[in-house]
Image (tube, rainbow over all chains, first blue to last red; front, side, top):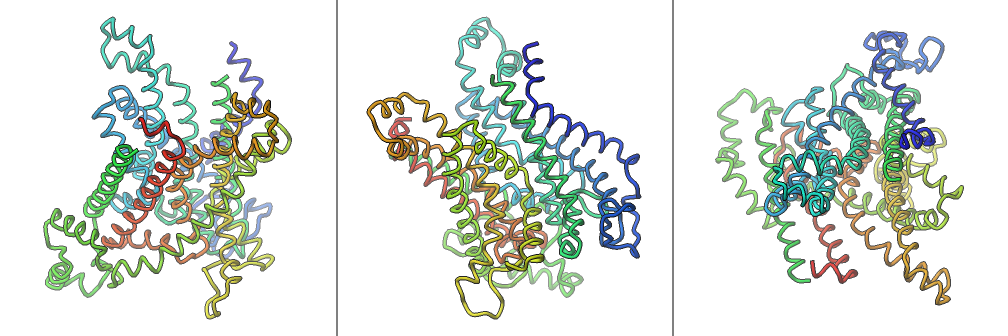
Length: 271
Length: 316
């Protein structure tokens, strides 16, 4: 009830939620929203500026950029969500184990975390992509399984401080199993920062996909994603500003909306 | 102090070995071979065997790894399988450009973020604080390669003020101004995200410090605002910032890679992509270990600085 009131008062929270819902609906109803087939080329109309026919202009093959951007939201959002889910799951699991058990378990997990952290993420991802190929599922798994260390550190810190608290000692004295203590007693108390981290993992994953696709290592053409439209635009944006402007603006707004949501959630849960 | 530090060095060595082993295993598990692009080798198994033998790629994997490790420790990173040149030479052609870009950007972002972060914290909730907060939100949200493209569009293409690509004008004699002109846009692009990120930490750090009792005491003693700020606030707020910078470093390198790509900056950015795709094992190993080494070294320095500024660390 009190949280409900605070939510109503927090305009930023509502604002970002509205944008995100809008983006979701766009991805969901993409086939009904587009004016052209995103894959259909009309080479005689290449690089047409925005106009009534092509709202965001056309690309180097005469494809409608608006339709491609709308369809691109499907890839960006699904990668954002599924990868973030993997990051949160892996990070929470490993962070919980390290923080709860300490000692050798903690040491092993933390060294693994360090190794992944000193690798600049994109370098690690590029090395991994050479191992698999760059299909949709692979990109999701790779981004998900390289992004968890930040979450793991956070969860570990929470667990380390919670496991010393009286209520945990009391439950342990009652003979509860480790699994029960972790899942029923410590985890619910550590949930707030995990929720915030989850919200902030989505934009990180979206940016990672965009960066990879921009370098030509992400989802392969002709499937439109915001990142690979920008990659194609890189060779043409001097003549055709709209080629790069619109897909980039969508990445920017989406990432910003999720960052705002995360920040306002932090405020809501803190106070 | 000594045991604390030697444990940190021990951890750093384990991490570096882990990075090299991980890279090695992943590269070798990857399908495809470096010679597969060479049409002369591709259909000639004898030539392939000879080619592998010459580069000791016919040895068992663990032998390859240990001989790589031994040579690397002696400063020999092997010969690039694609360029047929020592990896060290390739690295020396590219690493300085990347370091110039990342170093300048780090410096610029600190020069921007410390004053803005302090100002924001001292005037928390004011109009300018909100302006700065909006900038930090935008800065962490904007894809830097897109920002780079927009800046090129405006400053290079539309206004023709600044060059759009490379590190210097080809064929021109050395001129500092020319270098600076080329450096300006990529530095802006790379600094935006870091500055935004640092401002948040400086603001939060300073805000926490100014609420401490010793600041009230200092004010009660009659110290001037500037003295309090420099002697008490900044000194205490600076410590966490060292850690924040060292944790941010991998992101800086990642950002540099994309920035280099947009501006055709002659650094490691494009090299890592092409070396990985062409399975140039020695180059990929060298790049990964080099970056990991730089990051780890900086982390160690950060720990050392932290420990020497904060006496409580030593007893942990």
